[in-house]
Length: 176
Image 1 (cartoon, one colour):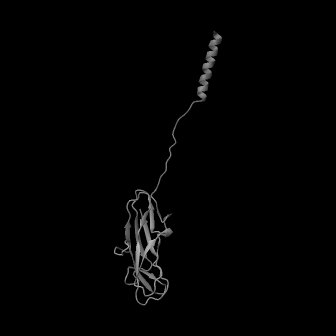
Image 2 (spheres, one colour; image 1 turned 180 degrees about the horizontal axis):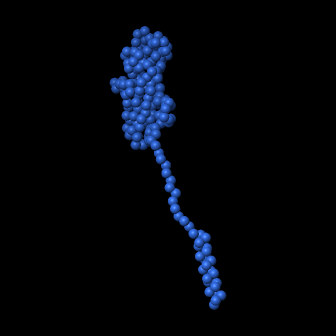
Image 3 (cartoon, rainbow, N blue to C red; image 1 turned 90 degrees about the horizontal axis):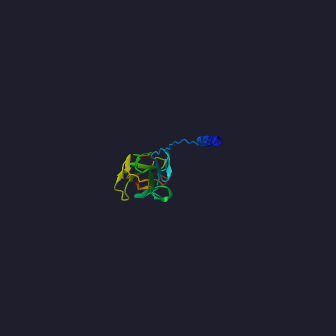
């Protein structure tokens, strides 16, 4: 009987040792991700040097009276702004290089030889809603889907303009 008792004690001791060899400790892994608000303009992101589009009045003869155009983003469509959901994008159309150089508009296209074509920005195709220098366009609260921004320009001809290429560069700021 003693031998059976010894065997039982040894078997029990073996089981205890086996359970101790497979003992487990539990815990957690904490995972985090911090997202910051962001925007893309015409499919590109960044914090400076963004291309908000082009206002191209095309080719006109030197005796034109008015020429209209729309700011076009990439791919031939209107300017596009995609921001994080819940943000309110605000576009501020700031100063241009030639602002105030010609009567008939708040902005001006220049040929580099002292000649200027006046023009202005508008928020409607009918050119009735003038967007002043430092004027803003507030978009609806973003749902995370790209929003189209319709911005138009109208250039005004004047007597004595020589033929040539006239340009301007206007600063734009996007806050959200």
